[in-house]
Amino acid sequence: MVNYTGSIKIDGVDTRRMPRHILRSRLALVPQNPVLFSGSLRSNLDAERLRTNEQILNILDLCKLGNVVRALPD
Image (cartoon, rainbow, N blue to C red; front, side):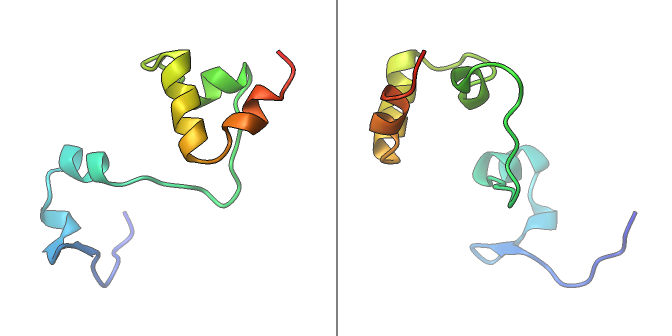
């Protein structure tokens, strides 16, 4: 393991003191070089199939991507 210096705090709380499941529920990682896995765009957006198509399209609309996705061929 690498011994890092410094700290990351959320609302003044050091993340090392937070239970891991709580920390993971509040953070998202967006890599600089995103990767699409094999399969459909839908399966890349919701690999565990937890959302309906309507929910996914609503989210894409919020991101201003709904029309882009609707214009793609099936």
